[in-house]
Length: 167
Image 1 (cartoon, helix red, strand yellow):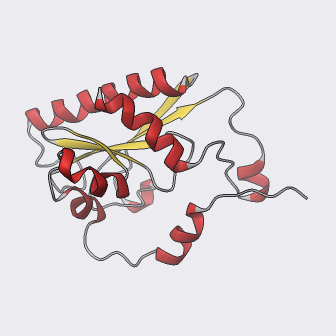
Image 2: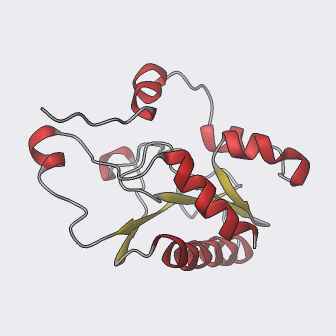
């Protein structure tokens, strides 16, 4: 029998539903600078833009799965100015380019889920998922064993991507 090691899953299992308030607002509260890098590292924040930030998904669908999130708390595009929307999309574009350079995926899934019925796990604060994909990265594991196989540890992926976002 083969074993899969996914150490971050236990944290997810034990901490599920324990966060009060908005997780995205809480992790983004303090604007990051070089002196506050350890807090951003702990929260997996890769980049802070003027109106949005980029964060590695702590419970990813695939290696390199990140999210681009506006600082402004809204469940949809409601209330986002043109300037915020532009910053959001520019950070999605930058993220795709960095993921392409660093991880060399064959393609991407990108998406928004507005509302629980649409699959939103964090429905109160909108965010855009950017998920790198490789040919053959999915097999029958998610369907048969309800298990995702992650080829690289989350912290290793974070460190790779952080170097590129810092450029």
